Length: 190
Image 1: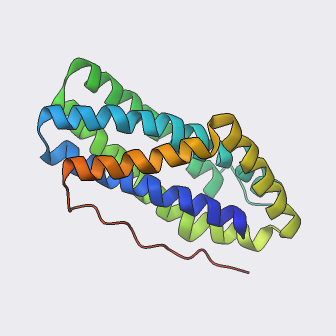
Image 2: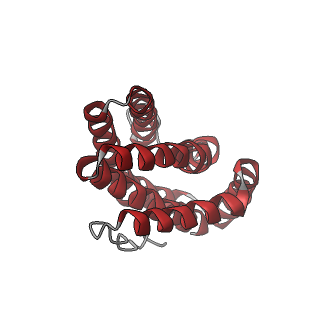
Image 3: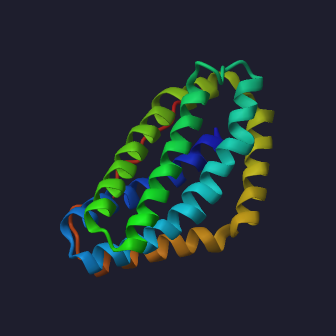
């Protein structure tokens, strides 16, 4: 389904930022860690939370719930809880960055990266396959259309292009080989 393919494209970029953030915050100088951290926080606010999570929270999750996937005690509730946990860790990173607290920044950045890796795996391997079994072609078209609206509201193609370009520039600038593009995981199809 196109809606899950689109979310997976977002996931691959978010996974790269999470991996690089964990690597840089643990191994780079304080100045480089803080410089990349400031960019990563902007990325998280605008792309990961402002666009990607908006697609899930405003459209996908409510539709999945309407199609019988429970929120309370179910995977949707867990995903929403993890979104909130991620936002709390982002706030911790922001505080540490403002205070120039490298140990605090490293701890919160590592925790955020770990949370996002596990969170994306759950969506990829549990929630999205459940959704594919519950949604039909009309649901997919409606989600893709609404995703496009959310994209436009949050910066559209320019946001995605900027995120990709800046991520590539950071990878070059930091000279890290620890980050390889994660494999493209296929989302189950009907």
